[in-house]
Length: 355
Image (cartoon, rainbow, N blue to C red; front, side, top):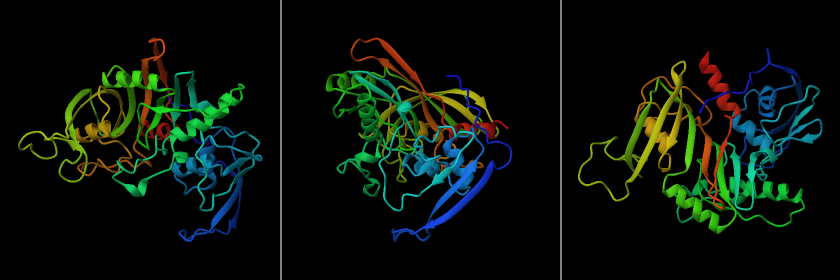
């Protein structure tokens, strides 16, 4: 899939016209520093996330998105919750941290890419779990999140708002057929009834669903096909391919699952590469593991990178984006396909690496 990043470079200079800050007494005993209200103006045309970073230079892209999605940012008195929304030329921005309380994560209307009686296709932002962790399956109980903080919860809210505008009342029901990692952005589908869910699940099991991801990786990658058997513990506590981290001894464990990833080089960058990955299977962290084992861990990777000895390129999250999703519609079996452009943080790192 070709890539045409948005031109989202910052304007010349800091773009900062004026900043005013005032302390807000925080009630959280877990924070050592006081929360601040920040007010100011920035050059028009940049995104809300970029504007937050102009006003608060120490803020990461991930934190900027969180502030925006939590409803902490107002522009000319209006709350902006879409981090990619553009700032008007005449603007007055006010950032009010959430003072220890967690607001419901929200999705803009534009995140609903397709809606009908059977499926809902949504653009997932990075930094949001797809579904809540289940206590009986969660190996990291400290990371459990509630439904209100997940993509499926935010999609229900957005769908309810979308349908209410069209005179449809009620609480939408959504079923899960696929998941994306918390820090992965891109296109994902939910179903609206059990029949549609079963049909799409069957397509995923038969590997007939088209899924293409874009990734920024360390080093100069090349076209490749990776076929391994993934195991929950390769010998050092990490998921990995059986026989890759350590020489295989004895029979392959029953927990091993076949995993196949096709990698296509899009272009080489400065010390890095942009690659497109197609999945035949959909194992947990499959792309991240295969690319890491090939010597090309994702830029921003924090887990599957301990074996990499080259110079590391930093990012707030693993640079992985689900750019394309195609399947047969469960109601009529007609092919349907969706593409989602790379998000701002991905585009900025790509531009930097292009020189």
